[in-house]
Length: 191
Image 1: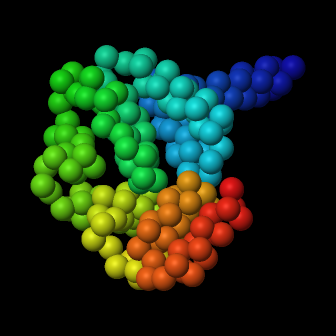
Image 2 (image 1 turned 135 degrees about the horizontal axis):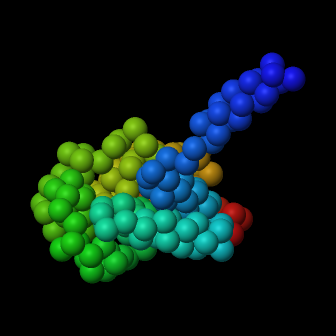
């Protein structure tokens, strides 16, 4: 009986310790919700994306340190820009004076083209979303091959919003009417 009591006590202690909630769980939940938002937004799962964004904001608002909330707002703005949606980052601007983070301000300056800084200086060009954002920021300067690369990255990751954007961009810069029609047909086929 005593052996069972000790074993039960030890098991209870181990079990209780392994399921302890981290003190900054809100940060993990906010980041997880935002990552889900990115995936759903890029894959045109708009209702899921909207829900995930609300969750990310809700969790980020659980702290007086608004840097997580600023990252969510700035990330949302960057995603919009990466698929050709005009976004002035108003949500970020509304709280930016409450956040002291030079990296966020640099990032904001790059994605809104107000800093004059080269996007390659700060964007993580190994991530697909960064590659697409970088391309969108420089879309008027890209070659046909570079636009094709943006389309390839978008397609590989299943980022339908970006695929449609880059098909439209490719159509806009097509050399012939037949090529423009080809891109338009692709857009219609995937809608």
